[in-house]
Image (cartoon, rainbow, N blue to C red; front, top):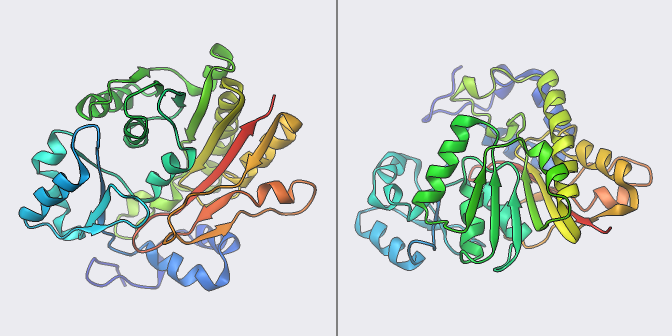
Length: 325
């Protein structure tokens, strides 16, 4: 049976990789597994954020309502709304998108700037910035005041990042075409806050209507991603100043890319760092604690949060790390 937008099938085992489903069941509470699996076949609404560097949220909302769009607010994110999937194409063709007044962005990915909470006047780094949605959101939160650096190693993605930031009016952002794994060595102890939205296996974005979204998934790919992620997190912790914070996040479900990376870093850096509780998530977002395992790091790892996949948003993992010395 093939899944279609009008007939999503619950028989996901015949579509998603069997080993992925086994691993997914190991990290999600039993009572949440049915909804989580169903989310990979859900036809999700299109979520966007009003770019307050360019326009007031109320004005853009009224403009889109006048054009006939059906808007629903995203709870806990004042400037975010959704439209039904059927209106996605029409939304992408509006002036509000083309001139940068709105940015189409998944609700889960908006959580990272909210948790990191950059302030006007601070020095902030987005270590894995393309395509720029989170960078642009942080620039808006900072009111274009302070220093915000964005790093991207891929040439094509670098120019896409730069174009999105220019269109969005993020004049405070300085963009660098470089490998984030080298930044900590080049700019030690420089930033107040750093976001590491690490490149990952992308498990949260698997979609049974798009087999290409999971065609190249394997446990070997997960392991490769984890090696890069460990280097990126260490680079960020070298670049943040004592007392500053690093938010590490991914859109994967695997322990290796999430808790495993954090645990490895805690063991390597010891008392130089500490995990902070993840706060300020919207009440409507369902979460579960990280897989803490056993041993001396149980209490620390339990402070990480896994956002559960749902029919309205993707899964996400968040770990907030403070540099002590």
